[in-house]
Image (cartoon, rainbow, N blue to C red; front, side, top):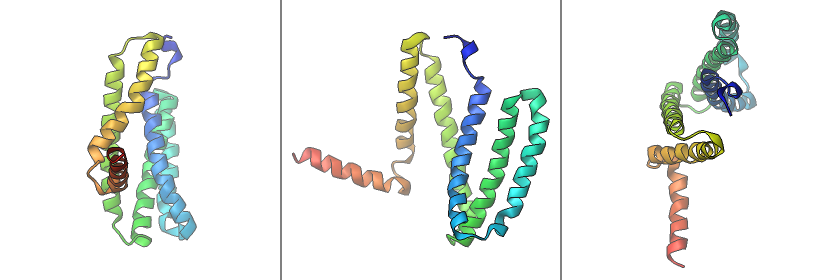
Length: 173
């Protein structure tokens, strides 16, 4: 297959982070869009746009498209922080900083999952069988690790309940 047919690893990492941050801040943006009060996070948006523009021009000469995507990640983080603070404070009556701390833990988990999957995939051989093995690794390993990390948290209460019901059905057949 050859490395000439692959995207650079730096681009893949930065693109993955961009998608992660983008999905998280889009959810908050949808919530905020329905409820209005756009003026409350407008300066985060302005700071995000300015940062994206400045960093894109600064990073492009050295890193190319990877630098532009990295600038977008930073800009999305600014929007994410702003929306997290505004939505949690105004609409959920909670602390935006608590939300951001939880998301920071999730981001660290993501980095561990990506690094672990990358490490395991690096051990696999090349060719079609290696490609199939990598596909299996990236589909199974992150999910198993997420389950191990979060199964006892309140976020997974629904999963525990459903697993208990399934287990009851299986054992009482």
